[in-house]
Length: 118
Image (cartoon, rainbow, N blue to C red; front, top):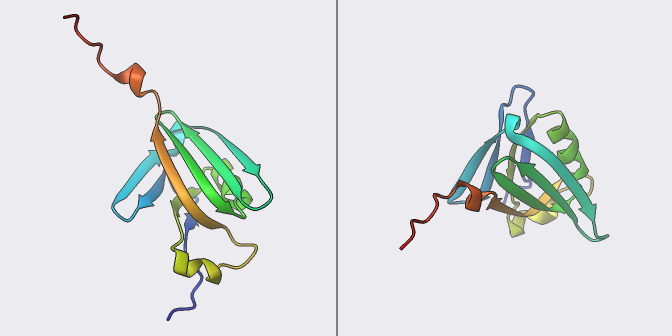
């Protein structure tokens, strides 16, 4: 069994987009140019980082997420993925650990073609 710390995020000063691995079967690239704002909240036990883009809302639930917020502020956050349950215990206390990522498309109603009258 590997004792390597799980990689749930990466930063790259040359990054032009954030790659989100929402699940093993689904990934998404969102350009940094489309980033609008972030909101970090703490309920004492876990943190919630909300990243708003022009077309998508990304909600990250986990621990030590302030570092991700700071890297996103510099537009250097290049990758995020949830950590598998088995690997969560390997993450150091001060290292970010992403427990869940939820991605939701926003503005779909505004982008949809109007229905034709019957």
